[in-house]
Length: 210
Image (cartoon, rainbow, N blue to C red; front, side):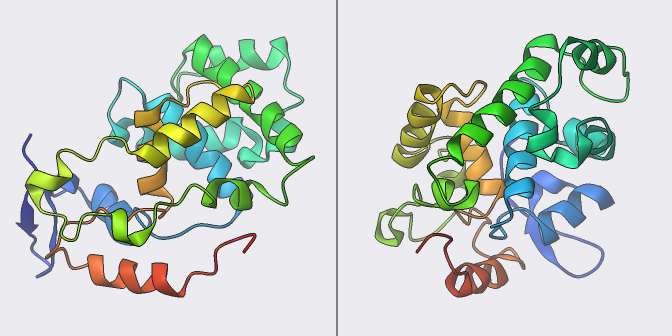
C-alpha cells in the first residue's frame, strides 16, 4: 500500500500506515520515532522486530502485552536463564507468535545482551553509537523517499556487528525497523503532526555513553 499523509477525524494528519485504527494511531503518535535509552525497552523492541519478520507490525503490537507477560517483562537477565521447558511453554501459548526459531532467538539474544554488557556501559550506549550523522539523512521524508527507507549503511553495520557477537534475527532490514521504532531515525513524513515534536525530542535527547 503506497504511503501518504492521511487526515483523521481528530483533525490531525498522520502517516497513512497507521490507518484509522486507534491502537495503531496511538503507537504512531506516542512511540514510533521517539528516542529510547532504557535497556529493557530496547531489548523488547529488538525482540519484537525479530518476531515481526514476515508478519505485520499490527499483529505484533496487538500481542505485545502477552509477549511482555511470557518474556518476563523483557528483563533480559531473566530471559537469558530460560531453558527448554520455557521454550515448550512459549510454543504452547496461542497469545504470541509460536515460532520456535524466533522464540529461541529471543532467548539467545538475551544471553548475548548479558555478554555485551561485560564490555559496554549499556545496551543503549552500544546501539546509539550506530546513529547516522544528521547530514547523511534525507532532508525531507516524502512518501517516495519513505518507500526507499528499508535499510541503511548504519543498520547494515549494526546487523553485521550483532551477528558477529552471536545475535540472531537481526538482519539489516529488521535493524532499520528497530532504529525507526526506537527513535534513532525520524521517518515520520513531513507534514505528519508528530514529526516536528519527534525532531525536537531527538535534538534534546542525551545520547547514552556520550
